[in-house]
Amino acid sequence: MPDAALWQRPVSYGTVGGTKAADLMSYPPPGYRPFQGRTRIGHGDARWEYAWTTLMTWGVQRNSGFIVDVTPSPPHVTEQTYVPVSFDGDGEPIVPSMMLDTDEQVFGPNGEAFIVPGDTAMLGISFGPFRVNAPARVVYVIDEPKRRGFAYGTMHGHPESGEEAFIVDQTDDGSVWLEIRAFSRPASRRWWLVYPALRLTQAYYTRRYFRALSAAID
Image (cartoon, rainbow, N blue to C red; front, side, top):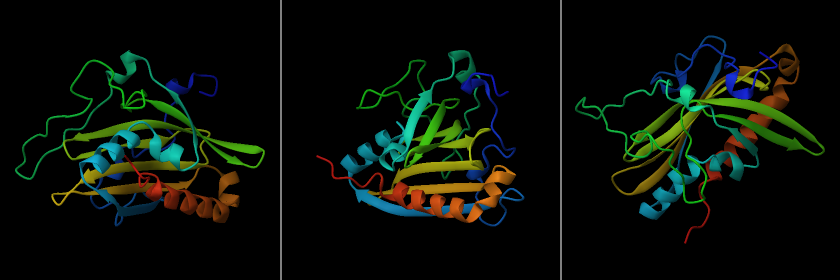
């Protein structure tokens, strides 16, 4: 669907939601390389509020050097999006706490709308005078009292095929953590030819992701 609006285009891989799998590192989708990393980004409620509100307004990507052009999907699309139910340690459903329990759009402190399933973004990386575009679709959102995040899947035109999840949580001792889970492979023969450079670029931006929520806060 090359001439369709960005929000109408499908994702470019089949295992949608695969980053939620507990055994992702052992059993990734066939042909894909998995990744999982987790780092402490601070402590306390102020850090938690900053981390999740920044994350849920594309702040990790922007703070890592990406240009992010968001294309919200029409309401009739996002309303039909499947939102997975999370469960606590006793097997009880966790009630959404942030944005999914309201029919109205919710905005962050910077005035930008929080990410919802079905949102689409064109992520841009500049290499000197050149820009590589990487379209992505938000495929699920995590909305728990102390654990929030989202995953996006690649769309046709992205250098890679796969999915990446960004999740922040606050543990009982007040520590705030960022976790990234992903599986990916080059999207086409052209990108396979530059796979070493693609891997280096991916590793570079992953390191920036883990530093993106560690800025000083008031």
